[in-house]
Length: 587
Image (cartoon, rainbow, N blue to C red; front, side, top):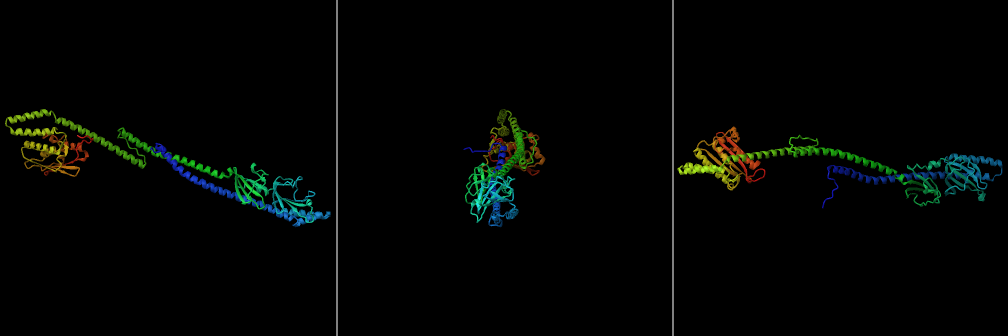
């Protein structure tokens, strides 16, 4: 089954994808954890702040209402001012009333002065609907019966927020209406009441929409669950009912797209802070926008680094590719361009070394092909009309027998054998045994030519006689020994063939002749100046060396060691495998 691969085939695309993933995955994981953590911590922080602010506002309002209640108690029949009012209501003397009214008015002003949060303070007589005492002028149409009920607590009726009864003001205030109990007057239609308002600025400072740290609306619910004040949307209109659980004191609820935070008061009323969900989560979304900007910036930076990294990889790759193209076009003379990046420079050096090696191999192959062609040409030159030569030799041998010339007959017979072998009648590759037999024929021929009996000894390990070698590699070495070393009948040549190891054998041709100097060895090895060209078979040691190189390459060796006056040793190291041309074709 084919493996599913998300990566594109190009290196550039893969690098960009991997860099983007390496940037995005940590960011998304970190972002996911951060979003959850930040949202929870932000929600708790905002919620805690809202409850604290709501509690402070509720406590401040309760404290204000308590102050109003405390001040009203001073003005009822339980206080000195209230007692004066009752005395005022029961007096008939105008002078005494005037004197007492001044005292009551002074007390009202004193109470107002000592309570800066209070505004209007007045006494109202219900029967005549008369207001005998007041610290500020109220509106003529003031209606005390239609004030919005906030709570009934400890004998007093708290109202508001509502418009102030002050004649020259429109501010919202809280108020308290409390009866002044007269034990001597049981007629409820002729009661005196104390009315107190908060000052004109207290409401604005207390129920400020911006005090929560975000846009919020204040909703005030009375002890009967009716909304008496709201600056929120239409869903919290005054007069609507809003059910409030008796517990807990602080609560939070969600309605539609609105968060509602509430604080119940011991006086019975409840203060709500109503916040739009969008405004409530604005801080979180602001953080989310900033985080998104960071992610986008990180992506841009990753893309920029991907482009830079791609440039760092692409240009060296292009340079290496160009070197390979030049190599494919057989342009071995181009200069090497380095990139100053260690890894790519190492690759470039390896490519350069490979190029040089290929060039060397090509040159070597060309040289071997040239040598092979030269050998073939030489072979043709040495095989000029062999049938004519053989027929002529046979004729000479027959004439010698006819005339009783046994020496000539023997010489021609041996020469014919040597010539047949050297002209390739037995093939290019022959067993070692055949090569040694041909060598003996050649030695016999040379004894007749030089007319003295020198020794040629052969020593060969068992099992090596069947090893195949290139034809005609021992005769030139022996011929060199005869030519340079053997000058009397004490001459001795030893041909020793030993197994070196399981893969190679060593052929050693040793003579006890005159020896050669280094210059003479070099001259013998040079084909053009070989002195054997003028005598013998005319094939020098260079032929042997080239045949070894042609059939065995670097797996063989050819060495000459000689010391003037102590003879010469020629050593061949030959693989035991069947000889073959280095291009792989068996001969």
